Image 1: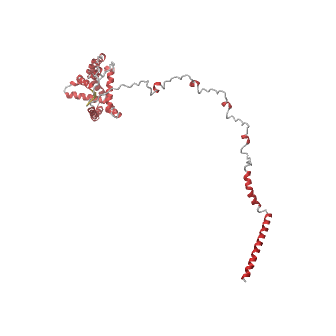
Image 2: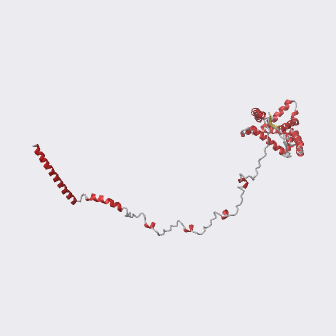
Image 3: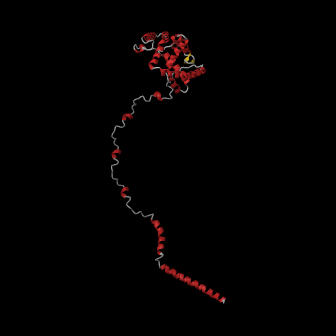
Length: 335
């Protein structure tokens, strides 16, 4: 029974396959005749390459954004922004801003702002003049530096406070009167120096001033000789007299209390000491006291000068030395 079923199955199988194949051919024939459903798909598939090739040859549709007249060969309408006269070959009108004379070949006028000597910084032809410098001999440097500091402390600790207190208890006219008195009484120093220098005019002026101020000026407290007779005093001393004779400064020396000096001026001050009438006051304590008053009174008139001097220079000792030598040189050079 099983064998019969197998044979029947083998017969039915080829027959079924044959029927299926015939039905498939019939359906394919019918599908070719009915193109309403498949045609659009094939049209799209076929039209894609054709559209790609047409895009290379067809022109873009004109949308009016770019007018052909803007790019044609015809001349554009002149809107007046650029005038042909501005770029013509004719000469422009001279408005006077640039004068031809400024750029001519003629030589410009020399206004002196740039001198040839000043511009030629590296020229060997120009002669450079250097100011003469006075060599200062300072063999006693350490002693002088020590005395400078001693005088500095004496000024700030003793002399300046005394002068400030003196100013507080005395009126201005009194201090001026004291200064006039001491200047008048030291007339022999200036008179002798003027005579030794051969300055007759200054010698006569000193004698006339002493006579008028001692009498009319109440022992020199007032100065009518200068106020009314226009007889001006001079500041000659024996140190300047030695300088007038050509004697050099010598070594620089700083004395305690008396301050900066030189060997020549130290000799001159020694001579001035003997020429001053204050030296011969008796007793000696009176002489010292009177000279101390003179020193304090003179310090009052120069208060603030030394303070400003110290603040202005890094090394006040060296600058004081230079200043003193220069100042005395100028005094010697005066006629």
